Length: 460
Image (tube, rainbow, N blue to C red; front, side, top):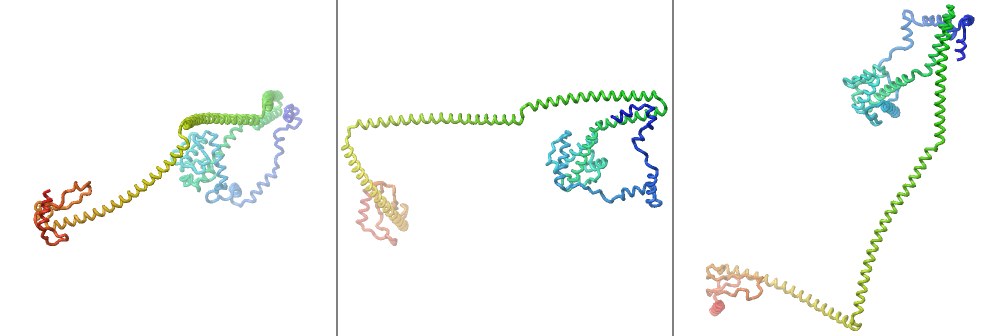
């Protein structure tokens, strides 16, 4: 401000005396002509004859155009670099109201649908009217080329966008686009800063000097005075604004200091939180002890009820024991009677054991007799069967046989008969004087007395 105030207070006469310091003084003395001439001569001397100057300088400055696509110097295969790119993209999407949820796992290997959604959102940050009309692999490289992306994005990489060999390059392109959008936003927010305001004040003062110098050279003192007054009014107004801003900042600073003092006077929130946590832990312990006490009280009541029931049972059993003792005490049996009854009991027990032994012996004999009877019955059945076969050979069985004469000579065993009276009488009447041989053969003549006796028995 000291330099501005000094220049502002100069009158046209003072400006005339001082040699009119102006833009030329600020910019410094002009370059000597010999310097420029030497540069031009050097350029002309160095370039080959017959070649224009512009073509020679362009060729010497940029060199020949490299053949093939430009190589990407970024470490695309590095896991750390990919992680940083994923964080950059997720941060931008989360702070700009991306309509879907995005996680590092999603961006580690996205599907075609996820990539289409993300790239459409980013392109719409550049052009709000952007819509994917055709295929993603056709429109994405074109859009990046319009944004002057320095590297080539192949369509084959977009066919399988989430594959490990194609996704790192696409992820780097998305990161470049996010950084471009972030830079654009920051550049727009930085407009109108203090630096630009200072440049504006400097420009206004330089305009004042140029107009004042022009009025001084033309001898228009009124215009010079008018310019001085206008500049004074501007500086006065700007000084008032600065004073108002200074007062506002002082008030804000006072409020901040008061708030800081209030916060400092308040207890430490960490200590308060720790104290509250300690109190809550103590309350929790008390509640746990109370709950445990209630449980123990309930169990104690149950045990008391069980004890009362056991005591009642013991009292009932004691009363029964007392009653039995009274009954025993009231009996007239003495010790001699008890001893005698004990001896008789032993004798009776010995007799019982002896009889049980006899019963067991008889049971064994019965079993042996039954076994013997089974053998005898088996032999009788075999004999009866042999007899029936011989009678059948002699044509005595059945009753309709030739020599049976209507009499049934067949023998049958009846195991269910209870006595001999229930069995049929034997032998039956023999009609002829012939009898069967015991072991087959021709019939033998029978004694007439035996035949008469058989008839007599049969008649009975």
